[in-house]
Image 1 (spheres, protein in one colour):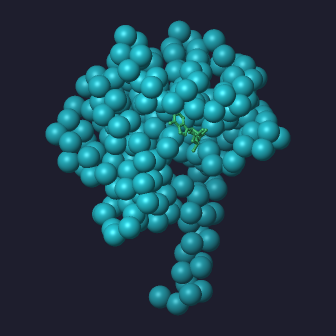
Image 2 (tube, helix red, strand yellow):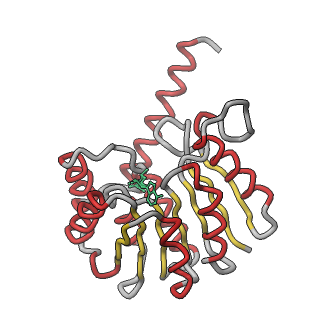
Length: 226
Ligand SMILES: C[S@@+](CC[C@H](N)C(=O)[O-])C[C@H]1O[C@@H](n2cnc3c(N)ncnc32)[C@H](O)[C@@H]1O
């Protein structure tokens, strides 16, 4: 295939994705405000995209999620999508390491009108997860924190779930570099390789990976607990 044909195909895919985003996943003022607040505070722009946000809501609707757990919140962008998928008496617990991020998240949750159904817990997720057992099971668990620890987060996610829970993890494609081990992998890559392998082989999970970021080079690992 010539370079120009490839370029045309890529452009076409982006146009289609843009249409899908505008038609099916438009950002409202609360989401736009969260992005603006994050920018003003100098937080990195590494949040999920709107189509991914809507996909989280679709999975939450599919299993009628009432309790959602998020690991890694950044500025609350994905958290707002998740919280909006909940009924009024539902609950999102969002774990975030950085207290400066947590302040931004809480303000953005309040601005988006989801403060009452959300709670931000600050600390290392690995320290916070054992304390969540009394609040389990969670219907949907979204993993988007430090990649090296993804296998540990999976272990906890399964422990904190029920049959029918959905476990979604971001960044599980990484240009195709995380489907098999390679020499001299860094800890993040190794964590993602292991996560993909564990979810693929786990007897209690039905799993697929979707290349659904803006460039189709990264995306979600979606696993449903049997
Ligand atoms: C990719 S960002 C999350 C993006 C967010 N889910 C979104 O799409 O809007 C990763 C976040 O995980 C947090 N994080 C990293 N290591 C963590 C840990 N061990 N425990 C809890 N949070 C952690 C980082 O501080 C950062 O805010």
